[in-house]
Length: 418
Image (tube, rainbow, N blue to C red; front, top):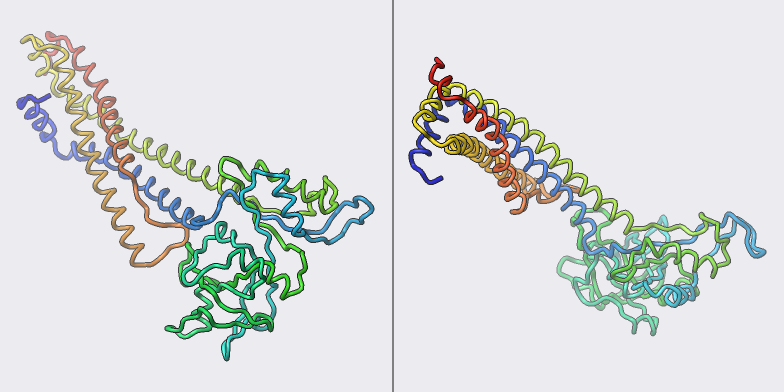
C-alpha cells in the first residue's frame, strides 16, 4: 500500500490515456454529484416544511361541532349544537392521557372594521382562549405578557395583539402596552404583543390576530358557557390519533349525539398529517439514494470496463511479471488499487462540485429572500462519510472482476501476446 513504485505505476497507467481516464472518472463523479444534490434538495424541502410546524404542538387535534344527521334520544336530525365548558372538564376526567384541552371561541369576520383605536381602525380576528393556547400555537410573547389564569378568573378585559396590528394601529416608536382598544364597542387594555415563530413578516394576515381570556370573551360578547371549538394535545408517549375516537365518543355522549353520527363533530388530526409529512421525507430520501446509486452504478460499470481494457493492453506485462515469480495477490492488489484510486479521486471531485453547487444555491436563496417550503438545502457529515464508503466499495467492485481476470492469465500465453 505504501510502495512508491506501485503508486508511480498507478499514476503512469492512468495518465497514459488522459481522455479515457477523464471520461471514465466523469461517470463516477457525476453519480456522486447527483446523489448529493438530490439529498440536499430533499433536506431543503424538509427544512421548509418543518419550519411551518415550528412551535406547533404536532400531537394535537382540533374539534368543532357541525349538524347532526341521525336522530337520537328524542332529538331530531339536522340539529345544531355547541360544546360546553363542562365538556372540557369531562374530557379531563375521562381521557387522562390528554395534556392540554383548550376551549376556544372566535369572532366572525364582519364587513366593517371591528377594532378601533383613536382615529385608526381595522378588521381582525378575535379569539377567546385559555393561556395554554400559547403552547399549541407557533407564537410567543414579544413584549409585555400573555394573559394568565388570574385574568381568566377575574374576567379581566385585557388583550394580546399581534405585532402586525401594532404596526397598523400605532406609530413606529409607540409602546402599545397599557393602551386601550375598542373591540366591537367594548374597551380592552393591551397587556402584550406576540410574534409568530414561523412568520415571514410580510403576509397580509401575519401577526394580525387578537387574543383575550376565554371568560372575558364569553361575558363581553354573550357566549355564556358555549365553546366554539377545542384544541386538544396528548401527553408525551401518547398519540392523539389513538385517543381521537375516545375523545369524540365522550363528547358525543355528553351532547346526546348518536354514536354512529360521523358528521356531527368535525375534527382535524394534526399529528396524522405530520406523520404523513414524515413519511414523505423518508420516501424522498429513499428516492434520492436509489436514483443516485443507480447513476453511480453506471459509472462503476464504466470503470470496470475500462480496467478490463487496460488489463488487455497489459497482458504481456502481466505475463512477464508472473514469469518472474510475482505473487498473484500482488497483481490483484495492483489492479484493485488502480480501480479504487480512480474511483475515489473522481468521487471526491463530484463531492466538491456538489458542495460548491449547494453553497451557490444557498447564496441565491439568501439574495432572493424566503422561499415557501424550501429552506437551507444541505447534506450532513454523515452523508459525506456514507458517500466515501460507497466510493471505496464501488472501487473494490469495479476492480474485482478485472483483477481476477488478470491473475487468470497464464504466463506462457501472455508472453506470446502481441
